[in-house]
Length: 249
Length: 249
Image 1 (cartoon, rainbow over the protein chains, first blue to last red):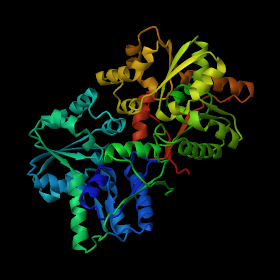
Image 2 (cartoon, helix red, strand yellow):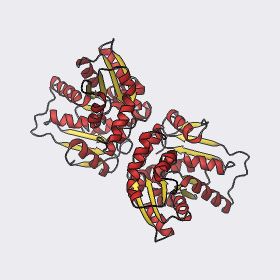
Image 3 (cartoon, each protein chain N blue to C red):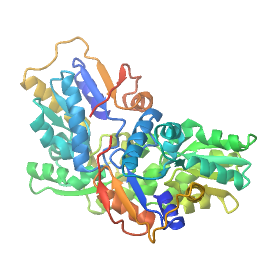
Image 4 (cartoon, chains in turn yellow, purple):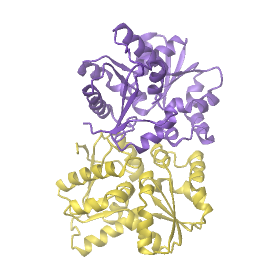
C-alpha cells in the first residue's frame, strides 16, 4: 500500500488495479517456492484483467519471484528491490544496512542488487519479523516499537552503516521510530518513490502513458475486505472504494 | 504444537498425525469464511490418512469452523475451545478474561461456551495480535514482551478478573511473561492439557484406545519443512522426525 500511495501521487492518470492476497499473507515468513507460486497466481489474475504493466509491490516476492514472473508473463514487470537498491547507491551509500522480512534477507537479493550496481559496496542485513505485525497493529508511535527497532538495528549500527534500506513495504509506517533510533544523519531509503519513478520512466519510454483525466483505483483481495479496508485507510489516508473479494490459484 | 505436546505426554501409545498449514498461517487475522475453508481442506487431508479422531488444535479454527467440521466429517472432532472453557469453569472462575487472536475474540465463541456452562459467568475478552509473532520470534523472556503483555492485559485487570484463559495455542509459550504481569493469584487456563484429557476420555468411551507399544508421530506441513522444524523444536523440546511437505486444497 505504501507503493500504491506513491504510484497514485506520481501517476494520477493511470488506472491502478491492486491485488492483496489477504487470505495467505504474510509472505515474509514463507519459503521461496511458496512465495513464487502465490506471486504467479496473483500476477496471472491481474494479467487476466488486461493490465499493461505489473508492479510487484512486495519486497519478499520481488526478492524471490521476479525472474520467474518476467519469464512467464508477457508484460513489463517492475519489482521494488532494484529501484530501492538504485536509490541507495544514488544517495551515495557506502556501508549499507538492509532490513526486511526473513524471506527477503535470507534470499540475499539486496546484497546482489547493490553489488551489481557498485561491487565495492559493503552490505549488512537484518530480518525484523516483528515490524510487520507492529505496523499492522498500528503501534508505529508506541514506546515498545522504538525499543524493538533499537534491538533489531543494534548490530547494523555497530557496523557503522551510513544508509538504511527499508526493505519491506510495511516499514515506512515505522519511519519515525526508525529515525529516532538511527539519528538524523542516516540516509533512509524507502523504495516506494523510487519504484513509482521507475514505473513512470518505463511507461514513458514504451509510450504507454495514459491520457485519462483521472485514473482511479480498483482493489481486489482474496479474503473478505473488512480488515483490508481498515488497514488500507491507515496507509492511504482515505477510504477505499471498490474493494472486491476474488479467488486466485 | 502445545496441544501436540500435551497429547504425546498423555497418550504415548496413540499414533499422532499432525498437519501444519504453514503455507497459509496465521489463521488468527483471517475471516471466518477463509479459516473454515482452510480447516476443511486440512481436515479432509487428515481424514484421507485414515485417522480415527480429529483434534482441531487451533483456537481460531475451533472458534469458527467446528460446527461445519463436525457436520462434514464422519469422525469425532474435538476442538480446544470447549475443553478450555470447561477447565476455566472447573477452576471456579467467576470473572473470566480471555485472550486470543482477532478471529477468536471477534467470534464471541468463548463467551458462548463459558455462558452455556454457567450462565452467570462474566467474560471479558482482548485480542492480542502481537503475541503469536513474539512467541515465534522466541522473545518469550524479553523485557519488551512483558511490556506488551502489560499493555494488552491492562483492560482485563481493570475488570478484576480472577481467571485468564490463554485462548490461543501459542500463548502458553509466553506464560512466564503473562504470570509476571497478572501476579501469583490469577488462575491461568491453558487448554492443551484439558484437550488431551478430553481426547483420552472420548477414545476410552468409544473403545478406540490404541494397544501399540509406542504410537510415534508423523508431521505434515504445506510449506517447506525448515522453519517448522526450527520452531517445532522450541515447542516440543526435541528434533522432529518425519516432516513431509504436502499440498492441500
